[in-house]
Image (cartoon, rainbow, N blue to C red; front, side, top):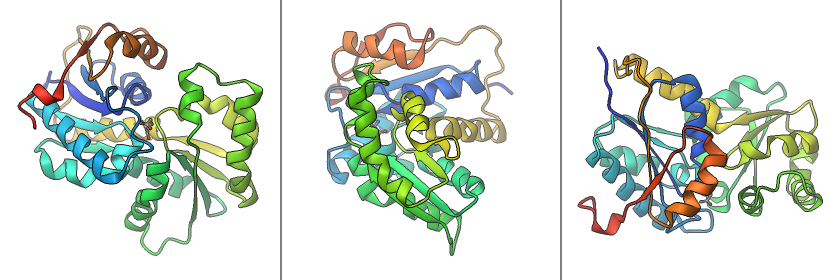
Length: 274
Ligand code: DGL
């Protein structure tokens, strides 16, 4: 059995393309339909209610486009709305939080795990909720730290400057003081900061990318449900955004690489999905 429909992936903007990168590395035959909500970006400083409304609206839009599953490739949207998205659509839904928490539970040696993300992600408590669900009675201490400036550094292409390293040291010092041996990169942009994070945290601390861990879950779900695409010709990917397609495409090529072609602007307000 072969299912040629696309995997629907969405994010507040370009960051979810790090998740697409990991999915395509593991599943190169799968077509992806990506939606970046660049007109309402960033989600990090928004309220949970706002992000919930946006996430459900985008998920419905992707289902109208006949995707076979949905990946909520945004930590802020997963934190705010994963259950609401699951309730709103009938296709399988994967977020970026549970896969990373599951990997952290397996990986930590000293039971002290750090979490870095946007303000809304860290404030939501969603990672703690996932830990309680996946590891009932957990003895793992999960220590969260919001790192609001990181997203802008990444989008400027700055992953090495003294200012970036100073911000990283400021944010990460409390996690070092807490003795974490595992650090969850709980934001779509942070895989692009891996070098700087490794430099500041040191070689003993394992960096866990939500993007890589989520791709493993996508692989399992498509395989288990008979939804894999068996066609051997290269898949056609589509990229949609709610804001300026040129801005989106410029950054998108850096986040995803050669699979990124053109982007189309789609106005959700005009879509039937509301
Ligand atoms: N995609 C967002 C996340 O993973 C980061 C950018 C934003 O704040 O919207 O949390």
